[in-house]
Amino acid sequence: MSRAFGSPGKYIQKRGELRRIGIHVEPLGHRALVLIDGVMFDRLKPLLMESLDERATVFLSFGGECTRAEIERVTRAVRSASADVLVAVGGGKTIDAGKAAAVNTGARMVIVPTIASTDAPCSAVAVIYTERGVMEEAVMLPRNPDVVVVDPEVIVAAPVRYLVSGMGDALSTWYEARSNMDSRTNNLVAGGYPRALAGIAIAKLCHEILMRDALPAKAAAEKGLCTPAVENIIEVNTLLSGLGFENCGCSSAHGIHDGLTKLEESRAFLHGEKVAFGTLCLLVLEGRDRSEIESAIKFCRSIGLPSTLADLMIVENVEAKVTKVAEAAMAVPGSLIYRTPVELSIALVRDSILGLDAFARGLA
Image (tube, rainbow, N blue to C red):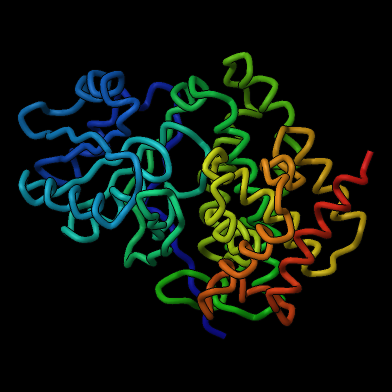
């Protein structure tokens, strides 16, 4: 039986590593373009310059949304600078734009997440959005990043909501891996292959550590502390979840997330928050045991992730809006939601979302 496993070349997680970024960039090329999240540009540029050769480094501020136009702008900047290394510093959208531009130009790829809110840093996937933040397409890239550098001091300095959002994204990893195994669909590596045993093991470990360390990690991070639990959750959100989803696959948790981006209300919520809600809907859609669904709902509530439509500010014209979400999730044949091991229809997806909402609201 064939199988495949994908990963970044190196994953490095260490306090203070942002100030040592040059030692990771220097072996890869002669000239670097550093793409930095616009909100953090002025604060992070001086720190990065401490170890980068100023004569061989160009800095560029990210435009704010990972659109086709933004990817093309970054691509042009890399070519104009004759850069052979692209360093992407920021959140998931900055990272995805950087990965896509690096592939477009043949540049080597160094990823430096400043928040642990998604599993984008390690993967060979870039999610493209419209200018209004509506998910448009997930592009499978031909290679993973060369190096991923994570500085826990930077992660803990960010609002704890981002860390919790990353836990929501990580929550989907094992449940969607199981969906793909049950539906016998391929993973997301090199066009799709059956998953390797290593990928399955990573997805399971991701879930185990998340269940064990999520609450103490959140409590510590709220105080700006970097405890072993926080370090573990940073790895869960960034590395284990990233390897898990790419090597095992996504399904309805992300499919429902994609549908939610069609609603104006979703603009106020982070990727992982919407994925967490989609994960709960996935469990209902698959007809999983009540105890498993209830446990997942209580976990989400314990760390502040949404478990009802009202938590996502969907309180008016609810059925019509949920129907719109279901239609959008199923609009493209073969998209992520179709990896779920049940016979899907718009009505079933709609009713599963509404059913999850009713069940969650009924829990004490």
